Length: 304
Ligand SMILES: [Zn+2]
Image (cartoon, rainbow, N blue to C red; front, side, top):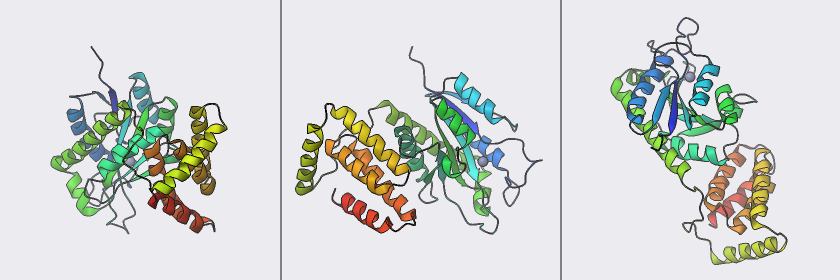
């Protein structure tokens, strides 16, 4: 019999009421209780299709290392850490969903996580969800995500909503509302496994170029291929270079490399996705090159 994919669900924190007051909503509901409530409901849904383990099933603190160990021991395909966020009481109305993944947002595993978890959380009625790299939090990222990444286990932290928001906190106390969240997360899990079980970035005819741009790319392709023995090696080299440039915020150079990848016509939908992300990143850049890159990238994307 084929074995089921293994998922480890991780209700964040546990039994910390004595040690901290910041994981407490305005009327006293605690984050670790909400996380557990959602995970117990989520397990019910997921165990019909997957082999599911919980890092904790009661209000008890488990070390981060033990949470990782469970996923490694069980050979998990996915580790989903369920959290809820809070912010300073001077901003009681902040409420939006977000996720954390490890390292670059651009590797294919993180792309799958974004396309499933961020996409499904965006349907949760709190506006569009965001995904942050854990490198934004700490230089080396978050312990759990970093360790699981080292063991090649896909992992994501979801922050469904803010329990510091007074109305949201009341909703999060109820089973029905947590059931809704569990259903959204279950859908995201399903989408994630669909994406990882198929060749994700096949050539696509969804995007259509204007003819002139196609000719321009065709010329570039001929030139590139005339200078190399293996197109396969060439695009993976250019792709890697582009990604390295992008991470180092050398957007101009990244753009040129990605365009060459595009000319060889590999991983096309991902390049488009990535260019859209480049615009977002460029908008955050403070340097003088910013305007030019944004213009260049927007022209490129609008030509598609
Ligand atoms: Zn948390």
